[in-house]
Length: 213
Image (cartoon, rainbow, N blue to C red):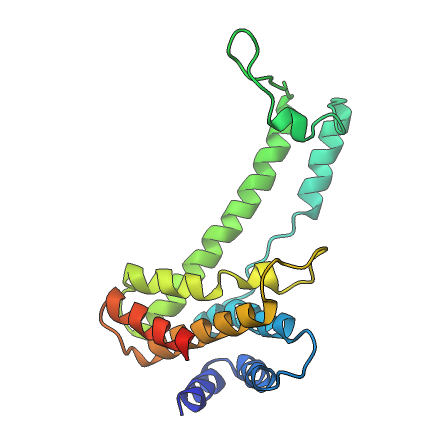
């Protein structure tokens, strides 16, 4: 019944997310699907992306770093700064006799390119955070308590890490990890959309029960 309620809420709020959620539940129930953990994490990631836009009625929060990276690379080459030489050995270098770590002097052009890249990334992070806060406030019908924002963030935190195929397998039971993550994600959405909590302890208890089920 709880999943039916969540599906109905998603259908009314973000219909495109509802169908993806239903598909993930079907995958969750079928342990014969190879690589199903990737599909499960992708579902969490996509719902995380679409919900704030659907609730707020806004556009996509997107960061295109390629032009900024190209500008940084061009400035780096223009200054003939080292590339291959800056490896792990440099990062772990010991201080010299004066007690100072090795430094690299860069031009204003390189520094400016770095700042633009960092600022672009940070601006998107802030806009995405604000969009989530706004969406939560609309769902709750009031200001968002900090513990709710934390729980919301935790529910989606691992999706970007596990949704893509890594070069090397993660040293964990990937299926069990995905199932646990999906159940926690579900419990958080169910709890927040029904407003069935009053404090952090109750929300933690609900999530703990979901993870044990």
